[in-house]
Image 1 (cartoon, helix red, strand yellow):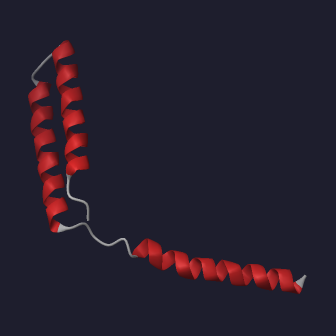
Image 2 (cartoon, helix red, strand yellow):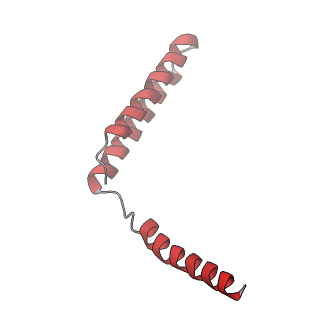
Image 3 (cartoon, one colour):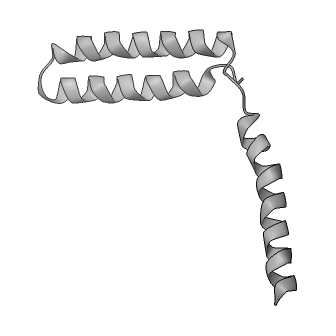
Length: 80
């Protein structure tokens, strides 16, 4: 029984010691990505402000287009 507990504790400590540094090593986003995301957010805010002046189906369509454009913009931003 002691052997099982000892092996389980050893396996858990090894898993944590290898898992934690791997998750922390992700790093920061590059300056190019940060700038691209900032531009995407500014464009989205401008499109959202423009859509706020519309009514009904036009407003809904404009918001959907702005949201879609933002998703595509973020997806095409340079990866870190």
